[in-house]
Image (tube, rainbow over all chains, first blue to last red; front, side, top):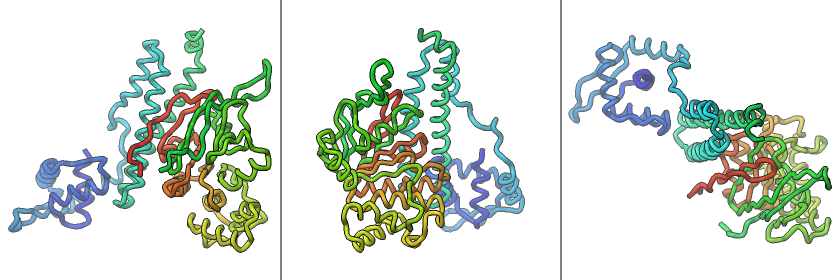
Length: 175
Length: 234
């Protein structure tokens, strides 16, 4: 998905080997997005086919340095200039689970409580990773993004609980 | 880490009013906070968070149960001894900072030590060290209205840390701060904790609770859930 544009962004800083691209990609995004070396070489060869990167000569260790082309720079700039569409993101299982629990007239509160503890645990672990992070601002911002997402989920769970407590159906069932 | 908690709440209840009008703000809550531990309390408004914090710091007395601070049960203390214990062992950080506007930053931080009877020169040295710790030695001579909201909150934290207090109670200390500044505040509390203090933090913001070793959820005056302590947190 965004792997090719991410690699282009790294190559815009200068020519790089495949292995180097993998290391730098992970350093920027935190361990949030591990890449295997196969993905890197597959992506590079497709980008070569599409004229976005150009390979150099193989060195004596068999390594090839890749350079970004003009078309590659244009593609990277197009990516930075285009907002991410909401529909490109995966569906959220928790949302579906809670909606189904309400629809099936199950007791939703234990579902909410169990999720709240689990999500808080995630927040604690992310915060600890952030405290330990020494990789610089890119990685810190990736962790911050995951922290904001976990926080949004936590707030939404509180909201669900408040709405369900106030709803006539819930009060009916508790009688 | 010491196994003796810095603060212990044992079956603590707090009821406001009596007879049919009685309202239980807290029901038989038990909670220990050890040296080096940061515990966050979360819950909706009215769940008893602030009551819990006020009881832990001896600002309010429980209807039943016992609060023990640094090994001393608070129920047996006279009002005067309780005030002394609060000043010497407990640091408070509140949302509405309570800095005194006519005093400079360093004078605000010195104040609790002067109340303890520490001589002015000594109190000033300690206050400067505390301001240094929160990165504010440069604004020591400024008045609260001359510094930013984030700096004011750090002054309030320095005031809570000055001296040898091992119990820090923080009630929504990130108040209206933006998130990077709020993170700085938590970073400071965390550092203090890692240096051996016990911190009890009340917050309604999950992102700040994430800094804790343990998160306790309050509902209607009772602890309903709690995350297990993170292992090898240090």
